Length: 318
Image (cartoon, rainbow, N blue to C red):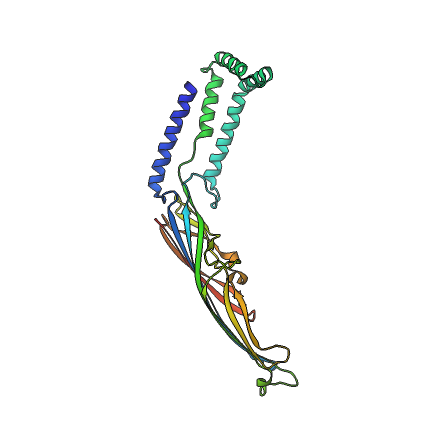
């Protein structure tokens, strides 16, 4: 009974500590909601008319993708998943592991006796119960070895205070607009800057609507996730990518190698390198309303020319 009482007291103590820490940290209620809004703005423009007059190319790219994802708060914990453990956490876990190993060493004689009981009794539950009672009667719980074992078990079982809260992505949806234009003229003996109308290729891409996933759904699971470290006041968040945007591409071509016509095309920022930059870390106190922005140098999907992708996001929790 002493062992069970000790465990109960330890559990009650740990529960009180965790509850107090959670209150101080002001986490979102478990299963509560948070929202993430991410805006991707892609802009690019340029002109290529070298002194050699081998070509005349100019283009504009203007696209906007806005994504909203709903996230669910996980139970606050003393252990982080996105945040790497700091030196104090590493030492704490090393101490807990050492205490567990020491407890196993202290209790080795009991483990050996338990193994003997299994050898004697096999699957006979009545035999196991009888022999276990005999074994317990022969154990001096006040011996130094047992006292050390209890102390080490307690040290190994202590849970850290609440420090982290994770948020798991649910469903996301969003809208987009895409506007692109390009003029291309590549010169040879039959076509020059003065007569480029003979070989010019003019392209427009336009689209507007709801973002979709690969299956065509306009509301789909989000790959976003987040974690707050209440001790350091930092947030690590995986931003939601927008999915796919459908657009119409119209080509008016005088060049024999490029046919004219209108086709359906897809646009997505994932092709521009945004996927490598969407895991963000920011300092934000309690992180109840966090916003930030950053820029990425990418290539457009129209001509593969340099463009600028500006990513703005806001995370809000209760």
